[in-house]
Amino acid sequence: MNTPVWPPPGFAALDRAAVGVLLDNWTGTYTVPSRTLYPHQWSWDSAFVAIGLRHVSARRAQRELESLFGAQWADGRVPHIVFDRAAPPEGYFPGPDFWRSPAHPASPAVATSGLVQPPVHALAAWLTFQADPAQARRRGFLSRLYPKLVAWHRYLADRRGVDGLVAIVHPWESGMDNSPSWDDALGRVEPTPIDAFRRRDLHHVQAAERPTDTDYGRYVRLAADYRDSGYADRLDDAQFVLLDPMVNALFAASEAALADIAAEVGADPLPHREAAARVSAALVDRLFADELCHAYDVPARRLSPERTIAGLTPLVVPDLTVAPALVKSALGEHFRLGQTALLPSYDLTGAAFDPSRYWRGPAWFNTSWLVWHGLTRHGELDHADRLREVTLTAAQQAGFREYVHPFTGEGRGATDFSWTAALVLDLLR
Ligand code: 9WN
Image (tube, rainbow, N blue to C red):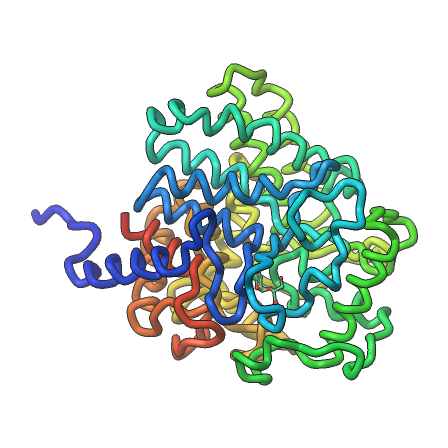
């Protein structure tokens, strides 16, 4: 019998090309998601990049996370964007002048946004450590990062805590800003008129692939209101307060990773294991229905009926009690794992399904990687292998695009996109 060879020989060029993208997008201290569309540092992008970069240079992957946490606020929040002041101001909107972070007493020396993104960082830090434990120990990587990760999780639990879960206050905080899960809640938000600001994203990507002007107006309104409140996290007054399954799944998985990190640095892992178990139980209790996890709208007290890939990502949580149901949903008509070019971001049968528009149907490599990681964690190795195979084939056909058409695999959005290259590399190594 032949022993299977991994990676298959045909993927050597893909591996080299992925390394090339990561080298090109490295700025010296971190990796930009895309040289054109996203010319600054993004929070969860850096975590995904570290997961791939660790195979190229463990030290560089550590630097990626360290530079991000160098911009942590004094209140513990890790900002969703850290701005490169040297990048042209017309490169991205909303830029530093919009967020006005230096005016806030808790902000760091560099200019940042005031929102956050899904907390995948402790998981990324643990995987980064594992790439070269001896080297990481020499640099004191985890002993320096551990207190910062703890402060980050404390911010989320204390300032964003609702019923044992973590709330987001803006669609950008979900990482899936244009998801149909936010439509009802966004309907309550009066859009800022489109002539009051200038979008920059449409300079780089077709309008049909990005959020509409009305939705952008709503994002700007919510962000401006949050900024004008002094980034105060007054959840009782806010219009947009949602419990997102992916944010909470990553919070639970990262608490589990923090337990491993704590043990490594000589701290007590138990509080982290208990927190992971509590969040995992709350996730199932509050967000699980019809074989999937859904977003919960806190002011409206309503579970969203929409099915998005965020609802499958709790598979990343160890010991999740509903894992078999999530696997069944991944394989069913809404997501068709292994039968499409890559896992779609949104229900293939959903009323809002659009195969080209941002987070309303196209397939992203990071969410597929999370489901792959979760399937592996839960011992679903055949399904994990199939997902890895379609993911690599999608990258081989489309290149390292930001996302792809879920049926044809045609590339969409930015090219040479960093987390696509990083996670493809992780699947290859
Ligand atoms: C807003 C950088 C980011 C990703 C998000 C993705 C997109 C920004 C945008 O790009 O969001 O943060 O301008 O649309 O939705 O997941 O982190 O790659």
